[in-house]
Image (cartoon, rainbow over all chains, first blue to last red; front, side):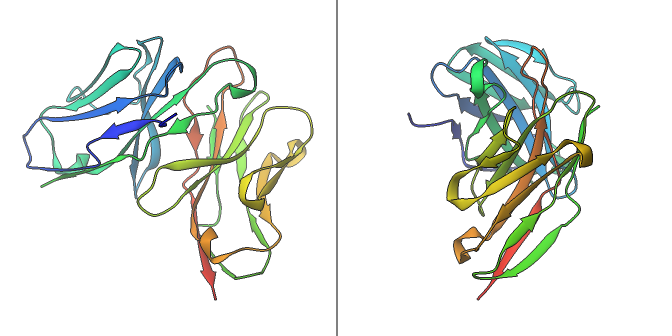
Length: 116
Length: 115
């Protein structure tokens, strides 16, 4: 398996622009998670999906952030409009519920976002 | 709410020496515990996990961790470190209920290996 795939790996944009981050989970995994990593706050869970349905979005910082999962193999995290404080590394992770894989999450390589 | 504390922000160890990274958690029920490693510019890779059973768990790359319920700890150990072990290490706790909530991570420990 190719693992969790994220694109782009790096994104540089200007304040006010729309940013879309993409994620393809591991085939067969039914949970998908979006995390944000910053020096100040570490790794934070933003939102997660189960069977394409958002379960908990309490970590989404503001209404400027939105996430979708239109099918089992694709998810997006959108920031509109972007601000410099959104600069961070955004990770996508997926997992398979049940058995000893419960809660074991597999992470993608991340997208490093810089908002100027 | 669950939380994870990694008290050491940075640790420097000589190559070949032993290593212990500390992790304490706060959680009301039986936790699922994890150690992940992140190399520079990379994603997180799972080193090992504890769900139940034997409290000493073995992981990849020669790492092991011991779950001590009485101390709410899950410290990571390695008997002899290699230069390639230099990385950021994260301890995480997961929900042991019926769902699959996201993990709560500690702030990480940056491991530096001296030649």
